[in-house]
Length: 408
Ligand SMILES: [Zn+2]
Image: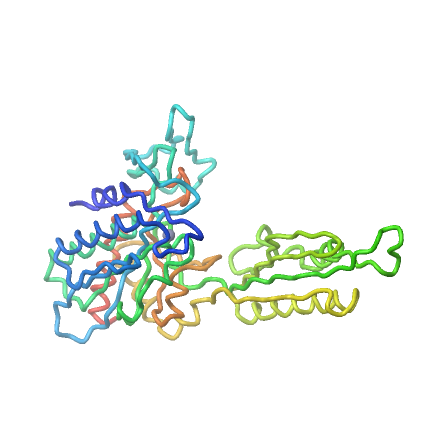
């Protein structure tokens, strides 16, 4: 079976995850793909194939050399985003893309244009897998699954390529931030692993934000407005003053690359009570600490101005930058960069402006950089997957396994 056929099999399964169902996996339908993959991996001839009660699938490609090679793993997620339907996906292949707008759905006039989606321009001449405009495609992250499975099939057919033990893991619920929670790092038993869950060809990510949430509560004092002089503390007014104290240019809409921010997610209030919810993000851990201190200082300033106890802040850590877990093991990045160069992929190392399952896994003891899966415009009907990127990602998996055994 070729990799495109493999990918198309997977997108036929609706595996949309859902927030707040209280279950793992969050939706039962994710089990359908998990079961299918378990069978497929068994049929291919992998060992220790297992589907767990929480919807993870694990398998082993046994070593075919007696050399001492580190055990490494490849991970992809089975679910698709709750933001867009993944039911009844009808993929279509655009042959030798000519650079013109792609009509996804004539009837509903849904068109992917290179003006709106400039990523398309890098893929002129290539075959692209697109949607019919009514669903997402699911290349995030079924492309990753197809790349890993295809690489396993290839290595089984090519025993002349010597390799150590390789583990494969597919998890549910990445899109709702709970993929790592379902994942059993100990059972996986790898020295390090890679998630195949990035976008554009060549992407490699091992840095993400340090992240915290800050909730600020403001207690006001309500008095009849006609007689309020010197008595009233208007919580809503205080909230507005406090929000204005935050640096106006350190916000998501004014920052890029390694610039961190404060993001006011929510503000509400009346005279008696007000609350502000911020998220705080920074790649640099020292600057991240400074940002948290800034929130505390801003609250202290409000209290000095309006009275002790008017404002209180609760700061909760959300996730940390995986860089600190990956940096002590530079070879796990070097292997990927060398493997990319060997198969003519230009590496694009990027810092993620968000978090990943890999970041959580890294702090659970499994250093786990993220590699491109090839798809673009995730989480909506304009998602597309250039077939050459899909094929190259799978070749990269093979190459990384090969080079790990070579001990570079
Ligand atoms: Zn993904």
